[in-house]
Length: 188
Length: 109
Image 1 (cartoon, rainbow over the protein chains, first blue to last red):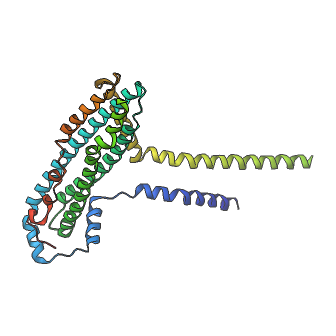
Image 2: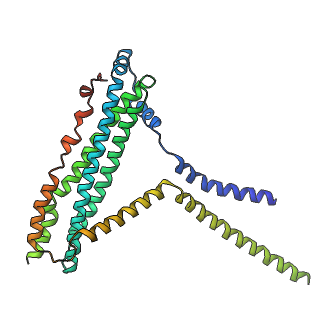
Image 3: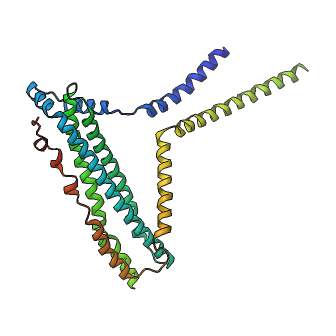
């Protein structure tokens, strides 16, 4: 009877803990990402297309690897620029607070920028990650994954460009959405 | 005498039950916490913390955070911001054509 109770108790604990452990272990690998892309796109290649891919594969993989490095450098440059801008804005906010002027619009802009920077970083990481996966896959063994990976990267690049534009737009509209209110407040 | 022993045994059972419940509760709190400490999520939290500390240090070191702000300072900063944004060129840097089938010399699906 005692053993049954203990077994029941352990079963209860395992039932609670197992889902947590499973969710912690479910990590996507490059192979699974590209295989999933093939499945999502329901991709099949004719022999002619496979021949073209095999002929161009090595050169294209080098090109995609370079593109990934170049994009990562650009993303870092953008993030440095936006981080530096956030520092400028925080400094203004602190100065305004010291003189007792409301600078809440700046705080709101910084919050929006941080959110947009997170999205930009995530989409950039996904895009460069896919390019690297495609650049390292064996075209001989997985030509479908190669093509599906490029199509996936194209969609991720579109998202990256969208996120980059949203981030830039926040600062382009800052003079009217943020600064004009503060200038008005300081002028009265 | 017999009744007193029974009462003591009952008390002992209640104590064991409470201690058992407390131990299970403690395990249910500690196990996820230890799992979190060993997860990539905790590494991310640590990185964000270091980043925030660095950002705060930079701000204190090289930015004017004390002098009063005038309207003209904000107007001047709008010009500075335009110059900063001049390096941003989303359409060129993240050009869709860079990985089009035509650019890569691949057949269309």
